[in-house]
Image (tube, rainbow, N blue to C red):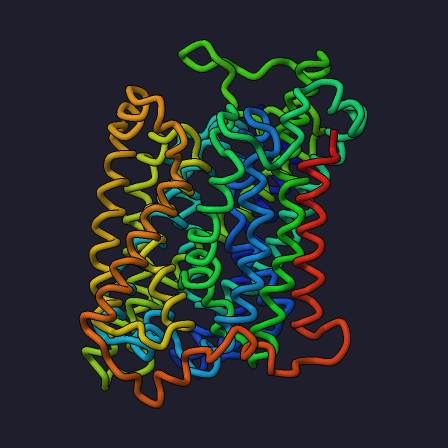
Length: 550
């Protein structure tokens, strides 16, 4: 696509606006330069900002590009990763957020130390920093580079360095407040751009009737049977998503840091629920456009996708193909700005959380008398180093079938030990500190080994030669790894039993009803009411798009 003057002007204006906003947020409390202000926004965040920031950090260019790619290839099947998220956000709001706020932790590894031990905290700190660099930032930078190359012909390496540099600049300067303020604005830009493209494509294809008449009926459903070409049967969703979903939404520093900065427990509960309602949208504005693109091509209303070297349609170009052939000049620039918004918000959030982890969990513990200003300086240096590492790793993300499958495969192998340790920690009083550490270490080594087998294609070759193992996709493997970790934790807790201290006991729910004893706000803003409404809405959507959509 050729860059027209108006498109270029919109893109340039966007960059100037976001950088100015980020610097403004960073200078608001520049005089105090307190570490608490820099890393947790002074614990002043209210539920709308928390919800928008959660959504913005989660949604990246990976979603806009790869979900459209999955929509073109597999229909709505991969929409499960969006519609299962509200259920785990309910888990965050009900079971985890209250303990995080009550224990007054700065990081999630800090919480793990209060519940288990310092060893568990250190191990999780390292794992969380690795996930921030290699999952949240690396895959996002690569996906953004693919899109910019498709739209404007920019070299991938140039795109990666440019976006990382600009995003890192205001993140280094402003900390979490700059991240959250810019994320909230970027979320709005992202949604506007995605809704416009979807609406134009939807009208052009002839509405839902036009889509249904132009694609296979199975592509309109979200839950698929065993052997479905998508490779994502229904049982893998129900087995695997709770493992990766609880890790991602309830225990990952990059995501949960927005909740840790909440003004109080009520805002910490309602913010994630607000994000859960927003998570309904991606299936319609990220996945559906890819399916509409297939329908438009089948109807002859849009040219076929460019071909890969293997001679097949390059589904990764679906989103940029839609932009090029459906949008007029000016709107192309707006969508490009939306892509940058998604990318920059995810990268900035991950950079800030990684800096928080290193500064509080590793550096300050060993240098307890470090001044506030020096802590902020250390955080800025770590942000820069993390950005450089992510830039070096991101080109390797192209080895996976799709970027979206790659990022979720990586999460599936990382998440099981962390999910098991956190869930057991807040629900089972017999979970011991030594068992926690053994589970984290052994589970991480096992997960990393499986990742290497997947990354080097050894796992796929093995499955190809053993047809009976075709059910072993990354989601099912994640569940199996979680079961192994649960067995290890249970056995080791009985081998190395430890009585809970009074402080540790305060971080374990006595029953599943305990989290509901807090009254919360009155009316529709009550977290119990919102949780029930959100759960019912999601169940209804699943029923409709599984049994009645055809």
